[in-house]
Image (cartoon, rainbow, N blue to C red; front, side):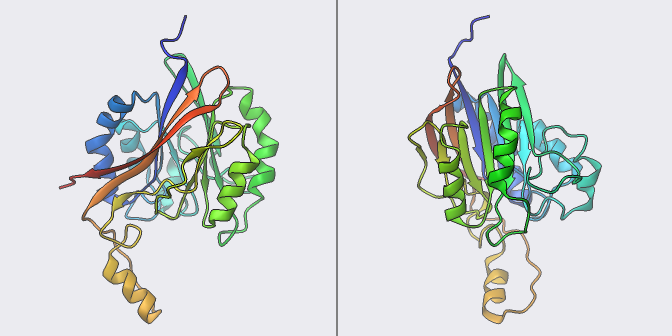
Length: 268
């Protein structure tokens, strides 16, 4: 059967922060899918439960809103309920470079309308947990992943911009896209690298901009000023959806477009 289009449209959504972020997805994702004619939606959900972690119920709701694959990062284990779903939900990922024996999986294949997309989750090591090398891990696994499809997008969850940029260059021409998550601040360096890989250092976040990276700003400021332990809470005002739209050529698996998304959401 001849495909209607010769490309795949993918929405990749930045870290969803608590209930305000989830509401923004509920209220706006369907329209975003229509406007961008998106075939697949990938969203980072590791902060979706109260700002830290994710639960089985929240994962199910995000899927019902239209999120095809949920990626994560260093907060994936913060809520014990995740262990009730991490092995069963084939489209809820933890970073691939966790040691062997860790529950869950680090990549998956999405299929819809005769099209397929591999989603890979990696985590950086600079200022992060001492996991296995993400560079060697993806190099070791990439051939197995590409046996399923040439269309491969990677959520690289990392603190250091240099490490994320290095991953983009390392995989240029080998995957369709490398996008960064974790810092919750959208960068302005979205581009197609010379060999056809779409890249952005950080997608940003889906949550309150009246905040310090999604958290109540007064509590965050108190923490920095006093250096005393502080119980953070999710901020609720001025909610935005951050992410990117990526178009991938079906024949080559190379990207031909990456566009930043910064959408205000009138969350009640």
